[in-house]
Image 1 (cartoon, rainbow, N blue to C red):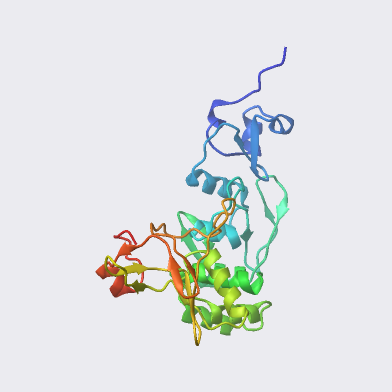
Image 2 (tube, one colour):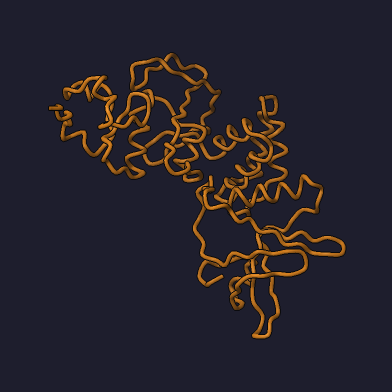
Length: 297
C-alpha cells in the first residue's frame, strides 16, 4: 500500500524555501514528487495552493539572493506594466551594482548579475527593491529588437514614463550597448497605444513607409439616427484615401502588457468606410479626443 506523502500544515498554502522544507522533515527527493510545484530555484509550493500576486511577490523575494534588486521583466511585473501568459511563471531577474560580490540564492548556489547602477536607478515598490521605471525600460529596450523596443516604450510611456527625462538618461549612457536601438525606439514611441498589438500594428505601417498613423483618434460619423463617436486603433491618412486599422488578437493570444481595462466597442475599419456597433457622441469623449471611461465608448 503506497505511503501518504508528508505534507506539513505550515507549507500547504504558501511558498517556502528548500531550507525551510528540510527543517520540517521534507527531503529534496520528496520535493520532486507531484505533491509539490517548484516556483523558482529553491522555492516550492503545494500543488493545491492558490497563489495571488502577494504570494508570487513573496516567492520572488524568497528566491532572490539577499540584498539584490529585481530588474528586467520581473521589475516590469512588479511595476504593473507586464503580465506573463497564463501558465507561465514570473521570471526571476535580479541585479546588483558593479561593486557587489558573489551572492547566495535560496538553493545555496552562487548567482550574480552585474549592472552599473546609480542612486536613482532603484526604487521601492511594495517593500521590494526594484529598478526604477526609466531604468527598467532602459534595460528592456536595449536588449530587444526595434519593434519590441517600441512596444515596451509605448507601454511604459502610457503608464507614466517621462520621455524627455528618458532621453536625458540615454544621452548620459550613449556609449552603452544597445543605446542606438533605444534612441530609435524612443523616436517612434507613442504612449497612446493601448496594447502591444496596437504598437506592433503601428510599427508595421511606419516601417512599410506609410504616413505616421493617428493612434486611437476619435471619429464623429454622421448616421441616420445622429452622429456617433468611434475610436479605431489607427488611422492612416493618405493623399486620396483614409484607412483605418484595428488590431484584433486571436483567441489564443494573450496581451503582454498590463494595461488599464477599458470597455469600448471594437471597431473594424477598412479604407474609406467603418463597420461596427457605435455609441452616441459623449461630450467628454469629444473634448478629450479619446474614450473618457465613463460612457459606453
